[in-house]
Length: 114
Length: 114
Image 1 (cartoon, chains in turn brown, cyan):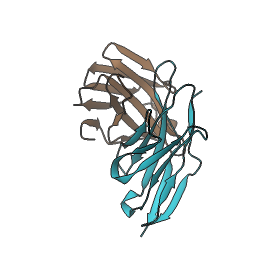
Image 2 (image 1 turned 30 degrees about the horizontal axis):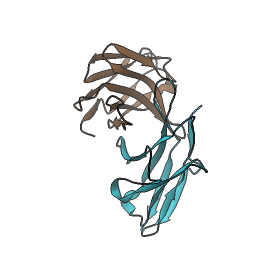
Image 3 (image 1 turned 90 degrees about the vertical axis):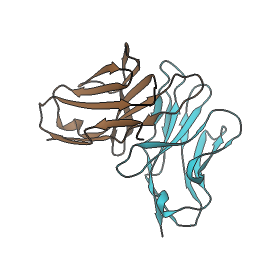
Image 4 (image 1 turned 45 degrees about the vertical axis):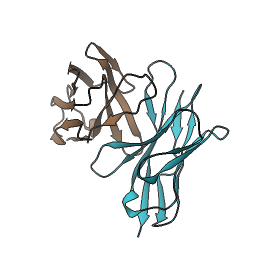
């Protein structure tokens, strides 16, 4: 898990504020992902990136944006946070799909929007 | 659409007893299946995967999973549970169309009592 780091680990913010969650990896993987975890719903994909120039929406991208600053860095932004974005957010990485590769997850960021 | 179902929100087992955490899947084409574990305040950790071949897959921490194509199941098992196995377990399937993402189940909480 230390190969994928997320900052901050916890954040409390107010409705309407802009928030950025950051993810860094030292695994040298091309692919990076952002998920949110809600109780009873499992993990849902927000955005994913194949490389620095390739960013794609996942199943729940509304209200979020991302930036792939480098191969090792992938940031998630909430432009104007709302309470139903309160969740646990995970970053993950994987290498190119020559073969069936598992994803490696960061420790998560717990975000509370008041 | 590809999906996985984890029919049990929680599984309780006594230490030393065998455990099973259930997962069924729905996917077009060949299934690629994964199990992850999440300990408190940690990210998801990869346990094992099924790609092809032997229906019994062995993974980390003494866990194994049995792939059953006719029943479309991929149940996680361990012969003798430990208290330290108490965690949240997620089954996932990789989609075979479009972007090959992971689709996660809703998770099963395993509680192992001393």
